[in-house]
Length: 358
Image (cartoon, rainbow, N blue to C red):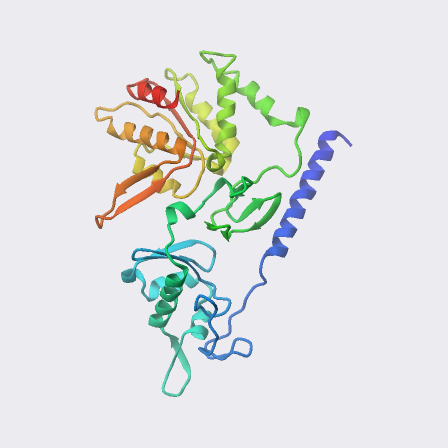
């Protein structure tokens, strides 16, 4: 057996072992009783509240409140938020997902024959808002961590892979961990299972590929670009996030180079032609994924381009971007991504970028 074959087998076995460990960590499937039936020995509506005032094993958990906004974890582990005016019956149904029967058991409505014929939305709201008050003030900008790499208080690396987290070499479920909330997201590429050494390390091969472009500094620029790729995988875990700006004439391979980056990162890259800050932060949300913007060209009104450049500068240090809301309330956004730009024309933004990121 070749060394490469042995490493591939180890990777497959390691991957399978991680999947088994994750499955063992998952809770058993819960089957809620039909409307009117007891849950175990507990009849509908006769449960004992937990410390936050919620019924036992509630599929929806409360994170806290910020002003009028109540933040919750829905039945499939996503972040949900609502103001009192939005907290209607349809929103409650969206929160509980495929656990609708739980509503009939926890907050039943009885007809004149003492049979459960529905559930009481006002009691659900009362219970969840009471739990929110007990949990206290909660800031989603500071507490929510989406896809990408992060660090815990001890400096340990946490990889949010969408459906699971990788911590201390082990996979575990998403959720509220050590003061932060990691929402369930679409699955993203996972690290290779096992060590990769010597000729099997893809970095030297990737560097050789990068050398085939006509760089202005052939001995330096491919290394810098390779370093940017490495930093892109660690965005949210870094104290400072670098950005790259590719400049070249038409048909020199800028878009092809962007394609190489897309191949390396796969779905862990946000590739967009949108040159508006709003379009980017609405797409990235709380994720810490690298962002690639192709053809960032100067326009008659250059404010959009400069807005994107400003967003990249803020992302370098994780600074807050503030914007107005439709209800005249300010909205904060914190970018933690590395940026890759490419353009034909080196417009005025170059001077500001070089001074800001020198």
